[in-house]
Image 1 (cartoon, rainbow, N blue to C red):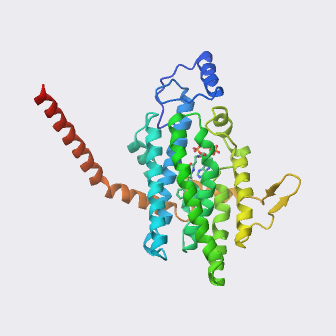
Image 2: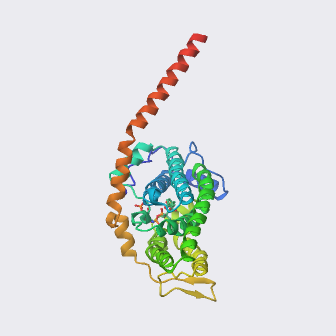
Image 3: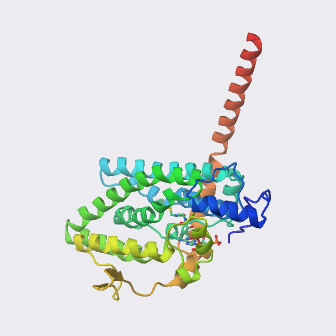
Length: 331
Ligand code: FAQ
């Protein structure tokens, strides 16, 4: 799906042994790499790929929740949901801007998303049939996102790491608002509690899949960890998420849909059952329930927004011309 060779490759770096060793020494010394620094082409491509996928996920991730803005049960819930969805849009913009510093334009990235060549998180290809899903997304999806993104605040690439600091603060608010929605339902009528349980049943496994394939199948992890783009492996982060989330489910009186889940006293970890990797790859390759709708909706939003982009560019050009004329008149 994702043609990694298409974007972010300027072929500019001299990749001699000395160059690569000097670059790795900077990484090992925890120096931040900045956009104008020399960097191996693979580092640039890996970051462009990951940041673009991340940006797309934030933007496509607005759709399942946006679906509920007009149907939120109270004014307070509606205001919080509106703010959350706007935050996700902002995250997408910081991330597209961070990717642009690597030499790819936002238009190129968007084009790759809309023509089906770019990936975005598998989680956003699932439907949101009830209000409980909005709570569960905040609790599980934002919860998983935080677990994955806190280490990215220490990513070796400066613009990505700095963007992640603000993103994580906002995700933490999202997580709490989601948990509070699920808690209200879980402490409500039996029907409301059942709604919360059904939603947990729908989102549990897809949330675990958000962390990516198991370490043995993760093609990028080893190199990304050497370059300190990633600080933890996919399985390690998945485990941290499970260990943090199971007590939260227990507190709510809800049960994750995994008959094999058990706490191992010796290791201090919750051991989970088999993840259905066939489902993961099917969804990643476009076969999820909502893949087609998500891309169609995103394409419509991009096309409908063309006049806004044109007007903003025309306005910027007008301001530039006016400023130039003022400067000329003053000389
Ligand atoms: N879905 O070798 P790895 C959010 C692909 S933001 C689809 O392990 P890597 C906020 C992967 O791209 C959620 N594809 O790859 C929010 C690669 O394919 P490629 C997004 C996936 O990059 C909340 C192949 O599998 N977060 O939720 C997925 O080292 C609520 C092999 O995988 C980020 O993007 C997947 N789940 O590790 C918004 C965080 N997993 O490119 C709205 C930054 C893997 O070779 C509402 N990204 N693949 O064709 C990362 O940390 C990493 O990119 C991983 C994957 C961990 C996702």
